[in-house]
Length: 407
Picture 1 (cartoon, rainbow, N blue to C red):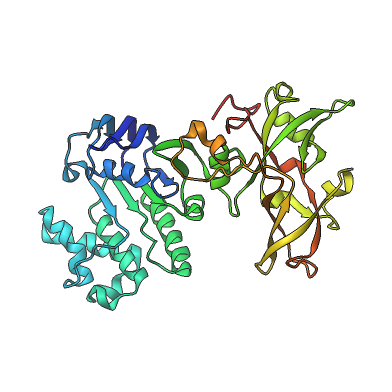
Picture 2: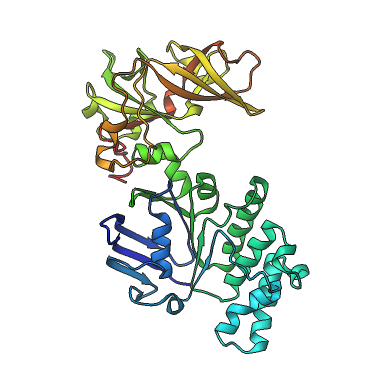
């Protein structure tokens, strides 16, 4: 096992393109860390630098207490599992597992013991004499993992290993990978564009955008306390609704926020959560509403029963019926910010590029329990649970919480 440290690491290609910008990241010994982000965000480049497949332009990369900038992949004692499995088609499963051990010049008895142990962990024992063409996609992925396990590396690297599997198999294999990592206790770095994989597998998740680390935290921390509107909209499905608004202070001292031409008193827990919130009164802010913050006006939700807020009366644009719940798309009189856009703008100019200043209405998303009366083109009354509101400053950064100075 080993720690991994990215110390102000850059990757700049000869044409001047900067793929990784000042990456500072410590991965703990035995930790399962997941890099996640949209295509082109730099997550795979970071992993390839760790593997030694990409040169480092600046900064230091350490595995354990050793700087590995100039070491070859073979010298780093890492093992990597790729998206395409990379199995030798003319070899049996046993021979595929044995091949990297032969390259390490291990004695035959030691090789056989490692193969037996890996096959037992991965359920490959009945398949050892088959060739890859006789295996399913999930079985091939297990063999690729087994070929990494037998090497007994200091760090495991996995680059979108489940992309070629169907949805049911992905769920099964990702559970097996997480369980295997816990059993072995080996440091594992996993790259994916799928936020569900990231949230369900990693001890911590590192969210990347345009080569920059946006936030690193345990999965639930990312969901509950996103550092900025990009993380807020990227983590969570469907994505968070982020709209432009303003804070007001009522005569009785309550702080309210404007949403679709209505003023909603902020829940006391929300007011207490943010540090120096009164500084933002009468100033423009960004308000985040996850789809589950909306609920039906005639539901038995306690928050609605105790509030004096007028519900939003909307026309349903479309509905996704998912059995136990529905995803409802509707228009509201708000200016929406698309925080997840991964275009060419930098983090600092994200807002002006995507803010719909001239729009009278924007499309919002609500997640509600299934109900017979919800249909495309129908009218719906939605209330808002103000305890589930997120607040961001105009530059897209989360307003600081009482319990933490910054993210």
